[in-house]
Length: 239
Image 1 (cartoon, rainbow, N blue to C red):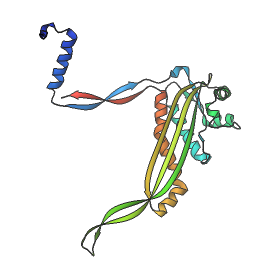
Image 2 (image 1 turned 60 degrees about the vertical axis):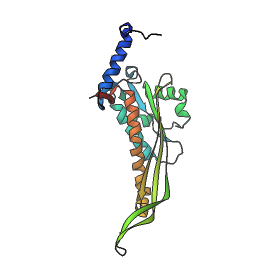
Image 3 (image 1 turned 135 degrees about the vertical axis):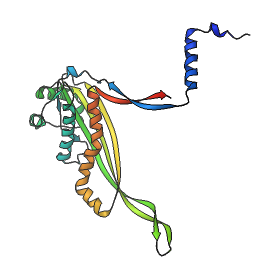
Image 4 (image 1 turned 180 degrees about the vertical axis):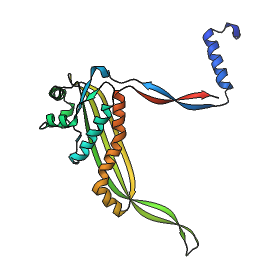
């Protein structure tokens, strides 16, 4: 059997061969960030007005203040979406006074359309969280200089580790049909070594601050998915 002549190769094969040769001739390649536009996952023009309902804690452990902080954060992020108007939180709270917000009611299409009509908006944003902290001891090995032995020695010590756990779920609904337009769920965690004194301070006030810190990135991601925005992608550049 004889091999086909190179001149008889189809044009596509020649192009593939040329690409292989070109890549093989490159000594190295680097990745560079390229700014690209990311389109919205929904048609914002269809939803010019949106109401952000108060966040709820599915475990009913959190006070209203930190939940209001999450709601305000969501409202601020969505208010930066071009072409979308977010009604004020005070108006939303006044109109929603007396309404029962539960994990089940926030996924009920009939409830969503009822609230949407009452608020006079085309879209409704909701959010739920599950947040808790754990404190546990952790054994660590550290090196210390012993003046008595005139050398470094390895010692074992016990440190208190407080872990902060957050599960946040957010949805944007069509206020007319009750159908979900966008959904995002994220789990986040942060571990911090603490002394007995800092553990008491964290228990008194730091836990709320950590909740807002952990929720910031998911809420920002949720809002970015609503509107067209610019992001960075890595592309290969041959040298």
